[in-house]
Image (cartoon, one colour):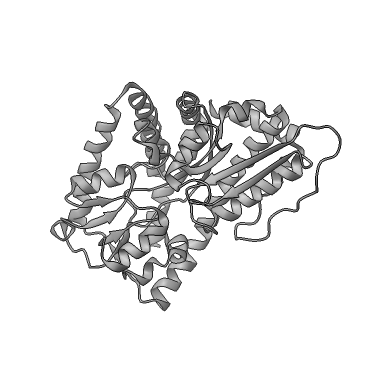
Length: 373
């Protein structure tokens, strides 16, 4: 799917979907759209369940998904109802892919790097250490990445849409200060995806935990460190109460794209107007969630450092150098793992190279100038 084709399709979808292009909400969390009532007549009805990998009332995503569900009800005049379940309410957060693929559940909201054991290539659609930022990720996906993603997921009986990016994440919480590569050696860290493989290669010990398990493990010292998202979300999980050293930059997830998956049979059963409306609603959710995180992270970080004793720290240069070197090896290993991974990697890196050449003289050059002014 090339960018021009996507934009043409979006314009047509806006006409077909009518109010599908109305705003999901403001950048900050506010009330969801109104529900118009039950359908009348003999129109087909779709009562779907949507499971997530996130805790209940998860900042940003919970409201965004609620808005999406209520908007679909409004657009369809009650023909489509989507009920949302947090992780553990119907399936665990790490069972979302299988539940939707098998048709037990119609929809899921998660992050594709959780399925690396099934599809190594899927990690490139979520987060790559030292890779694309959110603006670049969206550019790549809406250019040709999404077509590759959908092809891979169709083989697993899924239709997929980008549906929210966290932006550049924080580097993580630590119970002790990290001053060098040596201090990092042996650290037990909760971190998934390619970032976790890099941490292991750099001498750390990787522990995989669901969101609800992170705080107690960190507080009891079962783990020494944990990354989740950023100040806005991390504050809600209470991670600042278990560790006081908060590190940046988020080398492991310079952007993290969330996914909305739909069982392929369920998707194909939808009439074209609802398919168009749902595609458009996911597109807006993708942009809206990024705006929420962009707007709320600084406020949350100020609160954490000023009112909760959090110490903001930059990763040591020698550690970042080591992590970058290990990252290059890890990403190459994934690219070499199968033909699909190589195909997606080639597309990803080609776009990233071109984007970085432009960024050097646009956003990055402006940021350097701004700091010197």
